[in-house]
Amino acid sequence: MQLAEDGRLVVPLRILGLTRTVVFERAGAVLRSRSVVEDGFMPMRALGAVREQNIRVGAGPDLTIRLDDDRPVDASALRGALDHPVAACWTGVAVPWGWTEHLDFWLATLEGFCRLLVSRAAVDDGRLMAPKGPWGSMGIVEGGTLAYLTTRPSPTGDAKMPSYEIGACGYGPRGGELASRLAERVRDWDRDGGQGVRLWIEAYPADAVPPEMPGVLLAVDKRDSRVLVRVAEQVPAAV
Image (cartoon, rainbow, N blue to C red; front, side, top):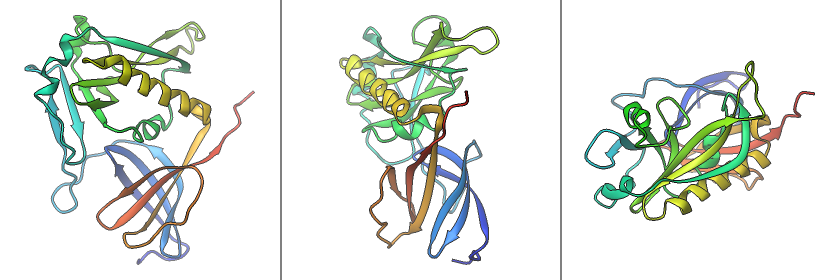
């Protein structure tokens, strides 16, 4: 490692399709985050590029599953998923503006985690429920069923600070089951601190064995390192 002991390294880090700008400080052979900020950036090209899968659901462009790895997805099994009635599951978790700091890392612990791109046309004409974000949402896929996050206005907000309840919608023969899984993980995030949660991200050499520690959400092997994402602490809510 060429970073000085008192140096800092600013990295655009991508983990399972989730992007963060991380300021690392060196602690021996380990890099530990000083700050973790949600951000987006252009994916790396050529050497070090992440292979991205884009799998269409059905014949049209309404819904696309995006993965950062080589997990197999049965596109033929998903062909009829959108023909099933939508199954919605609401969490009771409402947040200002619908902003859910670092929730995506909680969702990334679920089997079948993916990103789902949803077309505006399919939302406008009522064929699909609106995703949580303008581009789509985080979700999960399993066999011929998929689910993703959605929102609805919450009465706890007002005109100056609108609030939105987080929910999940599922399509396919087990749409209700997958929507319930997503919803429960949202509640886990809320119980763990919700908007007050902070994360630590640590990068270990690829051949190192990280020590046992509490609060680990994810352990992801990258080409030259093993990256841990863990809960740092809960920040008290402002009064």
